[in-house]
Length: 395
Image 1 (cartoon, one colour):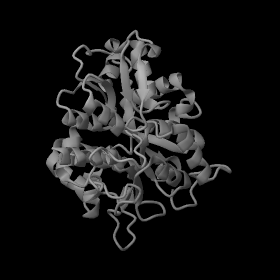
Image 2 (spheres, rainbow, N blue to C red):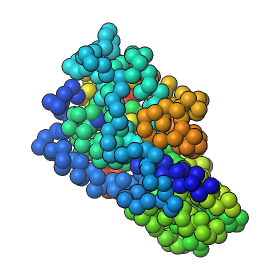
Image 3 (cartoon, rainbow, N blue to C red):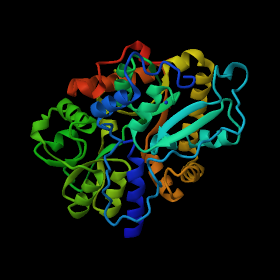
Image 4 (spheres, rainbow, N blue to C red):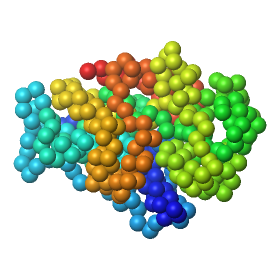
């Protein structure tokens, strides 16, 4: 059992690190701002704050296996869908000045939702031609899409908002790819609502970032001042998991799949509150959702290749649906892409990863509501204010 839990925790650490025009001459970095400056500023403001980008640093999980299930998290994954000869597509999907659509994603849920598309692209079974790159950290993709080295990137929602400001509107959101994955985990049977957390001690990560902002919002909306909860912040989710493993009476807030790992280590524990569901209860009328990841496209690339972007959206939606509907096959593809080393571990994580592909008005309502809450908690968490309407692309 300890070995199984160790392997699962290793996979979870890689999954949580979530918690890209035509050549370099595009206008991805307007004015005099350089790629390095934008990357640094976005990284500073975002602080990898989205709930699925759990800080992992160099520390290891308890009883951790020596080999990481995801391989080197900072190394790009093998490129897919690009042959030896340049192929710019044909007909309405023909690109203006390059061989393939360059797509960047993070090793974790965003890439899990892409694996079917990656597989089909490698076999030449897609309408578009693609070049895929996976990264271990969001800032690796931020610099590339700002500099025009990526056309599409799957990034945390608040990072996307910050990048919109830094690039002076040269990015647009085309879909939401993952929703929230935060859970309250405890063996305390008295906890069944947000209000029940009043006067309790709660262990979690993400001080000064989106997990804390989401908790503060949900507590306040349920009549509890955040100051009435004793938050004990840890640097990593694995620390919270270890603490809960030793004391099931404690209360933790954890992202999936760390919440699952905690329950495996201590069978007395269970998820008692799904923060995504709690968010939805408060926002049925507005359509706001707890958003984790979104898919961005460079506006200059979109303007020149709109038909190809529309096709990408269709193929991304089909890929996300495949991941949900065919977990066995998807898990094998996830392992083959090196996102998680073992297919059984990937399959266990999939149901909790909230992989989606939400577009159009539903996307705008969900994301605008989420960013509005973040802005009310800490304006800097979304950059230079709420993005304009041009931030949202409707096919």
